[in-house]
Length: 117
Image (cartoon, rainbow, N blue to C red):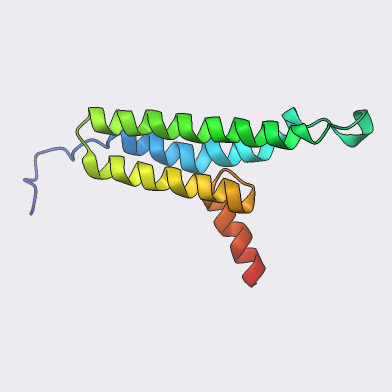
């Protein structure tokens, strides 16, 4: 299907843009910096064993909250396929958190790739 030459291209989906930003920027940055903010260094007295559970809980709330907001945004705009993709990415993020201890599936993929190289 071709577009007439004098029409502008359709705008990008807001939900798609936010989904890309969350998975490329927000989740990897959260995985990199939240542990440093929540777990005290060993030189400052260290953190107890509960700090790891606190961090996992914060990541869980972050993943579920962001994906729920993105899903609602996509459903509100009538983008059903994108809503399903967001749910799948949310499940991948939860699996990445549970299996690889990182909230970002992209970072988890890089860690798995490093094992093969």
